Image (cartoon, rainbow, N blue to C red):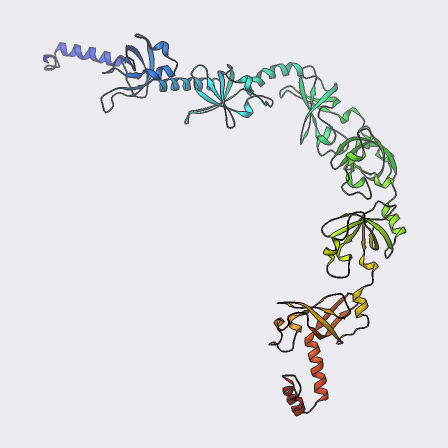
Length: 574
C-alpha cells in the first residue's frame, strides 16, 4: 500500500496515531475475564463479538443452559467469559463462561472473607463429616463441617436443607480454591447479644432457685437457669467433701439452688457454687468420732457404692466393699434406695484431705468371727453344695450365709480330683473338714478327702526306705512307668532313669503293661505324702548283697548280673 512506503509522511503518522489510540483502549490478555456480546445464535452454539479479537468466540449453548443463563441467549445480550486462548492450533479463540462464573464467585467469597461479612447460601446435600453449601449468588460450593451446623447437637437436619440462610466464612484456601463455612457462628453471634443482656441481671452473691442439671464434664457440672442461661459449677464448688466426678452427686434433670460467685461480662460467663449455700462442715468435724455408729442419708447410688450424707454439705462414699461381710461384688442398688436412712460406722476422718470414710457392714457382727468360734480349724461339719466351677466347689453350713471354698484336689486322695468334681451337684450334702479360716481376708477353705482315711498313709505307714514292694505296671510312656502297688489304690510314677542300672536296659519298651514287678522305695515322706520308687535301686541292693555273699570271682559268674564278675575282680585287686 502506498501509505507504508513513506512512514515519515503526514498520512503515515496520522494512521499510526489512530492505530495506537485504538489498541490502547482494547487490552486483550489470556486468563482474563472479558465481556462478549451475543452476535449470532444457532441450534448448538452462541457466537460472541469481542472488540479486539480477530474472530468470534463460540460458546456451547448447553453450557449456558446448565449455568441457568437461558435469559442471556439473545442477540445483543452481554455474557462474561474467561479468555483461555487467543488462538489455538486451529486458529480459533477459546473461551469459557462456566470458568468465568467460578472465578467471579471466588472473588466475591474472598472479598466477603476479608471483610468478615456473612454470605447467603443453602445446604444442598450431606457428605462425610458435614454438608455441602451452595453460594446463592455465584453457585460456588463450600464445605460445612458437622460441628459447625449448630450450637447444639442435631439428630435431624432435614428442616435446614435447601433453605436460604446466612453462613460465616471461617476458612479459605486460595491455592486449592476450597472454602469452609459455619452456621454455628451466625447463631452464636445473635445469642451473644441476647446473652449479654441476660448476664446483666446477675450479681455476685445472688441465689438462683431451682436450676436444672444439664450436663457433666471432668471439671464441673452445667446447670440451666430458667431456660435462658447455662452456668458452671466447678468440681471444687460442688461439695465440701472430695468429688471425683459430678455424676457422683448430681443426676441429669435434677434441680438445685445455686449461689453466684463470679460474673464475667467479657466472656459472658456466670460461675456458681452449691457448697457455699451451707457452712463448711469440716470446721466442726471434731464432733464426729471414729468407730462410732451414725445415721446417714443415701443421696446417690453408683455401681461402686453409694454416696451418703452425714449432714447437709458433708457427703461421704460408702464403697461396695463395705456393704456386706459375706457377699462379694454386692450392688448398692439392690440394698438401698435414694433418701434411705441407714446406719454406718466412721472408719476414717482426714481433715487435710477433707475425706470421711464409712462402713455399713461394721454395724453388724462379723460372721467370719462367729464361724471361727463355732467351727475352728480341724472341725468336721456337714455342708450343702451351693455352687461350683471348673476346679472347685462352694459349700455352706446351716445357719451361716458364708461360702466355703473346696478345691477339687481336696475332694479325693487320688489324682483324679477334676473327675470327682463331676459327681457333685447343687444341693448335695457333704461332710467337710475346716482347713483354713482367714478372718481379715474373709476366706474359708475346707476339704472332703480330709474326712476320709488317707490310703497313702495307710499303705506306707509301716514301710521304710530301701524296702522292696511289688507293683503292677499300669502304663508306659517316654518318661517312664506308671505303677500301682499291690494293696493300694493310688498310682505312682517310676522315672526312666530309675528303671535299670544299665543304660541299655533303661527302656520303657521292655514293658507292655500289666506285668507284676518288684521295686524299692528310694525316698519316703509320710508328712509330705511323697514317695519315690526305683527298679534300679532294687538291682543295686541285690547286687550289693550278692557281692557280700559270693566273694569269689568264680562263683560270681553263675549269677544273672552282667557286671558282677568285673565288680569281683575290682574287689580282689583292693
